[in-house]
Length: 279
Image (cartoon, rainbow, N blue to C red; front, side, top):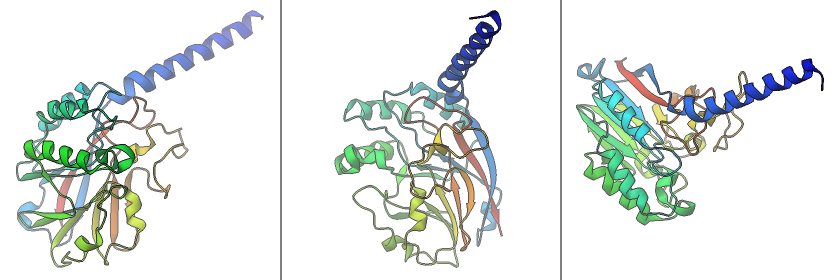
């Protein structure tokens, strides 16, 4: 091997190691607070300019240091959100009751809204193969004990803003049509739905408004100028950020705070800060 080839290969190896270290140790811990307006029809004037914070996909477990979540919560509290919503996957289920204790530790520092806090469950909150209702019930209890109202096909009213929380698509209790038929279009409404694939199902009863989701993690690793290589959804346009569903519904997909495995590239962990706008 001549000197030029040796230098080239050495530089490539160094770049590969650096990229691997960045994707493993830097970006997974490089939290981004994303700020967006959220215009809602019929929103009471008293809620105009209030802040709604979305956190999603904590994935508490042994796959990464959950102290990152606690540190992120502490940073999030500085924004003093009026309403906080959590959109599922509180644990990354490993068939180990230790995760319940870990979740209790994390949720002691949970971000709570001045007007209230709600959550929905994700597929991992349903345990092995998403079929263990006992896991979902225990996760719900821990959240309730942490002053978080868990919506399982239920509605919460925040001073005139109705927040509807769907049960999990891959879980055992998915019947959102029973909830959407109760939505009054003359009121201010918002839907929480963990898996954005639900947007393509015939369960919406002509709902017009915003949907906040998670589940995709934005793909976690996204090559520049290309879509993510891996997405846990059927509809691959559901990656992250705003998506106009072109039927009166608007979707926002949060990139997740935690991760299934500690690797991220071009897809930083996210907490979303929505400014509510009356229209």
